[in-house]
Image (cartoon, rainbow, N blue to C red; front, side, top):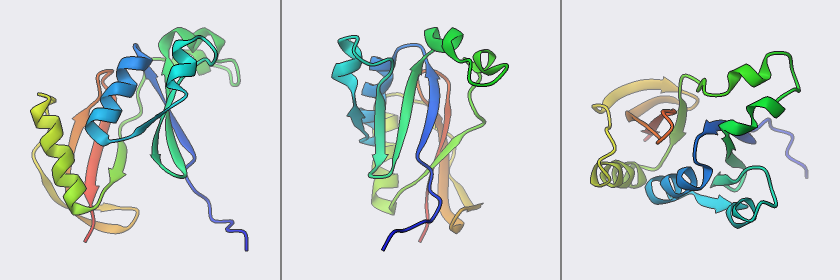
Amino acid sequence: MTDHTARLDHVVLWVRDPIGSAEFYEKTLGMEPVRLADFAAGQVPFPSVRLNEETILDLMPQTMAERMKMLPGAAESAGHPVNHVCIALPGDDFDALRARLEESAVPVSDIGFDSFGARGMAKRSFYFRDPDGNVFEARHYD
């Protein structure tokens, strides 16, 4: 049976240093780099990191902005991050992520409680930035 449920496939983030960004996501969030060696070898235009089996973050070099011609004004979006990307984690992974960020001296917000999201009310959440200023929220539901 084919599942026709809509899912988030990928999010494209503008970054200054795709290899450094991939290392950040691998070390802090435990994401698996995708096509990193191919990017480093000049064989693909950008690498990605895998959030789960269905979702990746594309790490688009800001130097690619001039090639974004799929819609009028698309090139001007380079360097303009979305408000934030939220990642839901199990409670233990939430705590481990926060600890890794703090160990790496990445500033994190205070922990918030009972914020609404895709699965209802999340028990806890906090925010942090990646090296390019993209804002992430980490949360967990119980």
